[in-house]
Image 1 (cartoon, rainbow, N blue to C red):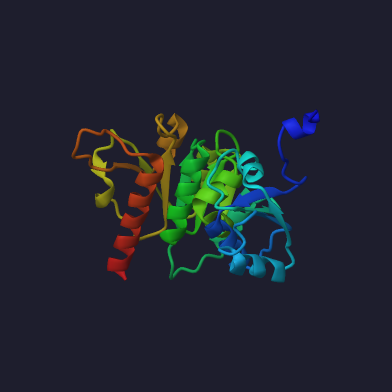
Image 2 (cartoon, rainbow, N blue to C red):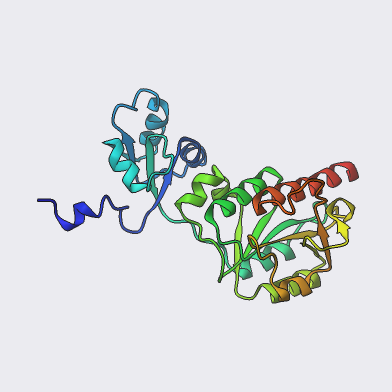
Length: 261
């Protein structure tokens, strides 16, 4: 008869987070952040040989495990035959944001992404990936009503979760007010806005606010923005997924900045 613990399935070692998938693990190793332990699917060693050797060289303990155990551990996610166990990611505090802004070089205007109430971990991970690709300098989230920096986020972000600074703040509206005092222009995205995001100047210090899935920005967040902008929609669809919209808006800022330089 199986014990109660075996019926519950495998557990992540205490105090560690799962990081699964080849790209996420490779990103960790490339930065020298070796996992404490690495579980590899039995029979998958040949195609993961180089990755395993890299992890072992950095001190990771490697164990072979049956595929069904990895499937249970990751709740059916696409782990690609490898699950690493690492110290959890923690967001930076609000004071860290203000320290970095005060020391910001004037030659490179900051580009920040603010997520207001984005709770879906897949969207959060995709937003982090877009932020990294666009060269955004940080992502700001509230302590409440925000997706956690968990294993799914790290998998979807493909390494961006480890390199893009995430600042967690207590009061988002108050943070927006302080950003404006620091010379950062706040652009919020809203479907009912009159201006297109392509008409907003984002060549200077800019913070781009994306609202929650379905609900958009909260009222206090909206009121704290300097201006509102929308993506022009030509078809029958009235809105885009928040992570898709985030990528478009961030790369519009990139386009403008490249032209300006």
